[in-house]
Length: 406
Image (tube, rainbow, N blue to C red; front, side, top):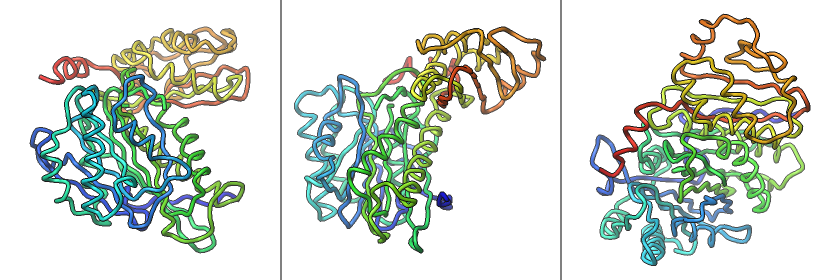
């Protein structure tokens, strides 16, 4: 029997035992009500750490440095993050500054710089304002209730924070998985601009921790799209400090299955909230592809559809143009039989066996007017299922990004 997973009320990245966090406004971003732009996440106990990162050929030195410090034989205590400046494409100074940020955070927290990770997000081609870092990192107060402050500190064009925590019990011991993320534009991850930080107080084998995160990212952050662009700074981290106690989680038992489910639940929630918060978006789009030859084919096809600009604009305009859905699934170049495809919009069938059927057009137009639009494509040639999430594409996205730095 699968162990139940419970939602933690007001859950965030510090809901797991032993984690604290905080944030401060240093002036990297333009001022605003309750804005933050530097955050710290900290565990007094050393953490096993897993990570996935941007596969862009151009990456921030923060990504390069974290890759060096994340591994099954590595332990970390803290993560320092800034928003408003990506620290990308700034030459050798980028790595100098990334390391300096970790040293500043480590000195403030009383840990090793080598056991401190760093992330940056914001405008590419701008150096980190180190004078602000030196002044404000030591002023950050980390507390067990500071997850919300950390969540604010990592935002750029986001309209809201993205936070969650869930828990499960094993032999009377409660284990918690929490997380925060940011992202609103430049979202088409392939591990978007996106960052996600997840924590757990479970005692997890480092190799199993990495395998769990990699699979969760495959089914969550790598299945979302806002605009088809992949950031230079994409980072997802999972820290496990073992503060809950209990036996080690390493795979092959109920506890491991529950942990895997909990991490996936957290990652999918955070990923969906990124898609929902897409720049200029008015609707969340969920695309499900069933009946593919393999799961990977279904994931590929669903993401192709969620990422299609023509599908996005059709949803925005409430246009039941199912030909665009067919096009987007077809361009995924997976095995299919056109004569077997069924298609649905919010459970209203509009295509059967590859051909349009009689349906109430106004009902579909009305369905496309909701805050969430569900597209389903049944290929009917296998057992593979995949889900992806995106958002509509609006005039506001174009206007916003045409003057991003001005």
